[in-house]
Image (cartoon, rainbow, N blue to C red; front, side, top):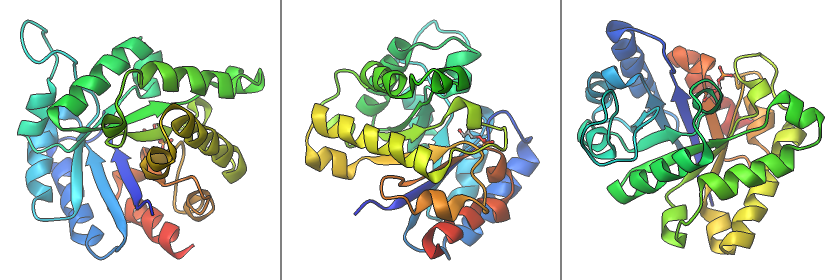
Length: 253
Ligand code: 13P
């Protein structure tokens, strides 16, 4: 049985005071929501402060990116060990904003995934098609190529540490969500890829989150799908009530 996993991607939002206050509010209330794992992923400069605000709660800490090298002359980058050092358990990798705005390739993502796992982090690896790809009926092909590229050369053990996030690019920040059927179809396809590449045990273990305009109004219908194991939430994660409401709807709906 896969536990629901709801993570908030704060992206490049909030300054310290608001970030800490949000973390405290999420931490205080998350403990009252059973059977769900939570994480928040603040901007990297606030990881330490947010991590302290979360201490003792059930809410995990995640970063939004990292570099694959262990250390050295890589100005502006952060290593997996640094993320662990400030208390991270998770790191989002291959988010579509990094792929499309900052030019990250599947190879870049794959290097980061391997370095994250080797250091002891759980990567949340994002895949998702653009609107043009969906309209050209290339969704499955694109998801399969991102799956093979971004998650190449992982052992069975490695793969079980990965969380996959299916985030259709056209649904991110647009208020336009994939329908539960559209999302479930891709999640089922991803589950099949895990089964083909590994085995049933891996396919049954790996959690696949949905992301893209998730809110308390659509959470129940999306998260009740058999292959949707949680959500990666952007906008609605910036307020404690709207973030936690997603989990409450998911378990009650
Ligand atoms: P929104 O929930 O704002 O659409 O963002 C989704 C996302 O990109 C999470 O990583």
